[in-house]
Length: 103
Image 1 (cartoon, helix red, strand yellow):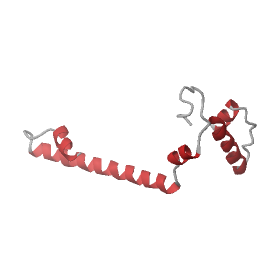
Image 2 (image 1 turned 90 degrees about the vertical axis):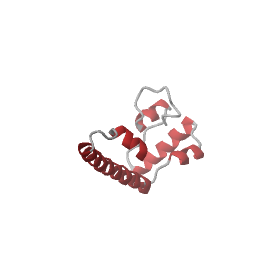
Image 3 (image 1 turned 180 degrees about the vertical axis):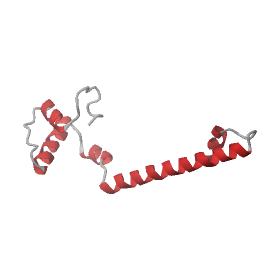
Image 4 (image 1 turned 90 degrees about the horizontal axis):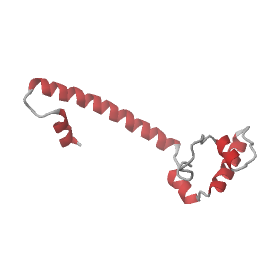
């Protein structure tokens, strides 16, 4: 939605967008939310291809969180290893030089 409205400074909450496009609010249950969202998407001129390109599944979100968590663990472990290396080899390469070769 932000790509469709790049200059918008106000909230991107569904109710705010419904107000922007003069869509009668009916967000009292899941079906009403979906119907209102559909109207907002149509009013914003967002096509199906664009929607699918930006769509996320629950599985993809979970996988992303797992990857990020694993990356943090790997970075922490790498920091410990590099620190130990620098203690034993103080005249060796800097942490930035070591990481440049790894990534």
